[in-house]
Image 1: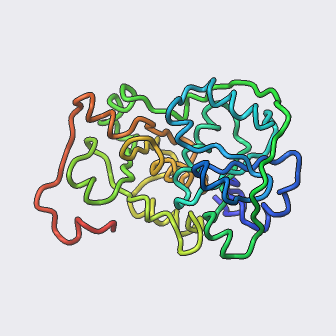
Image 2: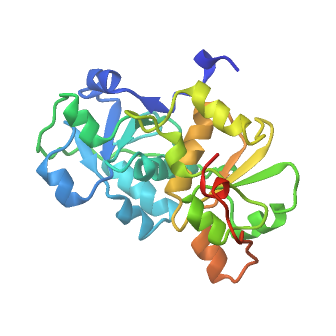
Length: 267
């Protein structure tokens, strides 16, 4: 797949600056309310991820985004200050309820500031708009679905936790790609060529079905989901409840004993 045809998953600061005052763009800050109130990107609204995770029903999220003046065509840009993981979880949730016109700011808020881009502490309100609810179950993996796919050779299960957590215990037949591997020095995601190499090195193909998971709420694996989307992969599912639910349900796990030096590395 040619690089220029890749999905527009991220947006750079220069491009976002040109859209800040655009009525067809809405910027969402998923940091805590206290951080947001201190200062934020101009014209952004605050939706702490904790508010989504405490009630992750589609109708709850739909009500929230409508209150921000987001309709079916609004371009939504999401940012955080935690290497893109929290923002990635929200972009996935938006796609799940049927809003695909969404991008990740490709730098953290701290980086935005250090680059000299504008910030302020003004609180903005927008007129409530209507948005249709169109659930996209094709990007969600439930625990039952994942259990059925464990031994399917056309499905790749990817664990995005730290390497030591993976070695201690993981879902059977999962492979480990720690979330830290997706970032570059200055951006939340590496360039497409480097990302492709990560997955090619693990023999993950574009035609595979890929199910990503992490520790508890789908944040680290949400970053992996967006990394895969950014290089054109389409058959990707997020196991939102992740390993926490898997363990709570007493499902079978695997572990690797006596890990050597190479086992402790991501490569």
